[in-house]
Length: 302
Length: 243
Image (cartoon, rainbow over all chains, first blue to last red):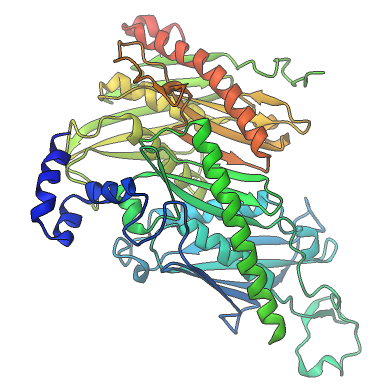
């Protein structure tokens, strides 16, 4: 413990900013011992979260989620496809997560970010295993036509807790999704019914009643940092770079565990830590559910 | 009644394990690890001079390259690479060889379930073979959750697909050396009960996850013994009998 002691002596005669840059871990630990974080949050509190539905007018469903300054833009485009023979009455969801160079100084142009495919995979695993969306609802004509939902999530500002923000924006985009009206034409092909000639068309639209997806058991996640005995909820990018043990817990609205994800890290998680993280996530799920409900009811008034 | 498994194993019975060290002559360290029909080959090159971009020059850098049995690497393999890298980073002593890179190449020979845990075990044995300094070993175990809430260990591919959910867990192995009093226990739990890595799939209740943890810990003790025994046999002729 030679270096921290040396920094302890220096702390009284050094400017705060210099101390923060030279001894980042020591700087954070000093805050943690007072049960506060440098951005004035208590350890277990997540950053302010906002949600705006319908941020992209050209998409069928979209949402902009912000957790602190981490910003995610999610948009869904629906296309008609022929379902596979294995599951003739099921649609399909394709999820892609993009990290363009504007989101963080770590991402360089021309070279894709290392974490982007991993988050993309985690998102599709979480959404499929939580069975939030019944793929049968995406079916149009059994064996002939079904919806393919392309969900693209763009990270505009990567300031920590990427999966949390990405999942929130994905869930919000699905709850905002308006499925376009289609009808069968004389050749047995599916055609889009545009708003103007809706009355003129004689054919009955295939999916007049099925304009919205019913979302059951919505998953919400919370990322925590484990450092010594402290658990820090919803870390910023700075915190993530200094303290490396991350745990992401995903719970659905009925408090079942969808994922407990801890990729390595020098701090070991014991049973008590697991339970503490789950408890923090339970609280967070309630908050996020309220934020989502508020955003949806706000849309309905408009 | 207990769940019957297709291959006649009891729920907490593992498939036959085998571990061979020093199987490749050009690599600095190598190992093959198999659990039943799942087999993974791992090679270690390093420590080599220089770190990759954006890495901390004060610490050793670990790089994992995942080679699937066939085809190109996709998102799944990228995720495995990331999990494996972070897991190995946490067991290696990174400050001993600063500004160096150690590459671990994982080649899947055959996948019959529990692939990730097999890769963790193989990589760990290969690191020992290469003489990379480590804090402790890691043992990985895969637990599956059956429809009726039973936990089965070390599933085959078929079982993985049938089950409601599964959890891949990595624990530290028990340290055999003498430690200062109290340091091997944290909050009343022995160190080998702490989770290094946890990856889960499928929905389960929190209690079911804790049950998986408990069963995984029990099995990890057996795995840890096996790993230690097979690493202690120094000569290549000794270890080759396992293969």
